[in-house]
Image (cartoon, rainbow over all chains, first blue to last red; front, side, top):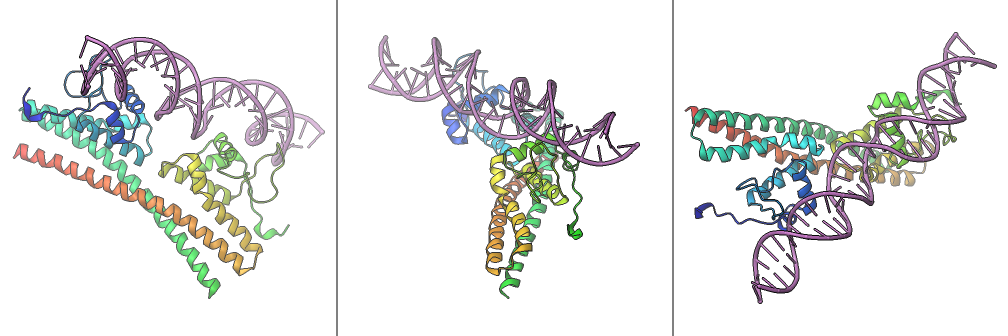
Length: 152
Length: 152
DNA sequence: TCGCATCCTTACGTAAACGTCAGCTTAGCA
DNA sequence: TGCTAAGCTGACGTTTACGTAAGGATGCGA
């Protein structure tokens, strides 16, 4: 093989430690299609053989976990949301093989749309949380106010 | 009774509509102690009788739902978190009866602590989400960048 | 006081998101 | 080439957060 992109691959246990998930959870996410057949790169793993993950795979998983924890979505909703990542991975792969600028345009536009969707969702959350933060801060201030008027 | 604070009380169905929950969910939240014996005010409802809620109860429920939706906590974690609200309700009740300033101080300090806990949690979330937002925005910009360099 | 919509309790059902166990296979190393 | 830790594939178990259905009680208007 061309030794340039020689990726060290990890097995599921190591990935579990790096991501804070359990092996079972990782397999489950793959099972429901949230993660795509482990090692989206290379040939599609033969039955019974160990899963092999690259650093890129790990980062992808970490991204997904992050979205899972920060937005309160079901794994199914999350699946839809992370089509974006899938699309972006797709792009990175195709970018290396295609040189059709029209096709490139298409792929990039898709990725852009998906990212926009995610961004909208995140921004909504931030807005709502910020509002909540304000209200809580207000109440907190009110508490102090009352304390002063007591000891005053 | 003194007619001044004559509260109109609602039954569970109406509360459900107002909060977007189902009656079952409201009963469930009470069952696990997230909501306290419906109608925390007045006498503790006799077995089999209808639950009665005040506007204050409804607001409290709405607050809890909001926290549930915005932070991604389990109902048990949420229970712990909303001790604050419980404490504050407790305060409002006691404030009307006690005139011991020392006791007042105590109650207010408790409420303040609980609110602080909530606030910390919310702020952490906001921070993380804001970071995510930045990264997504960056990626989005990168997409546009590539588009330009294609058509350029 | 009667009627009936709404509520009550009890209990079993369920979907999502994994945990756990069994029996077997793979793969890195001595 | 043999050993063993780690992984694999079912398959069933579990917890959380409610849904649903049964059978009876409540309570408000006519």
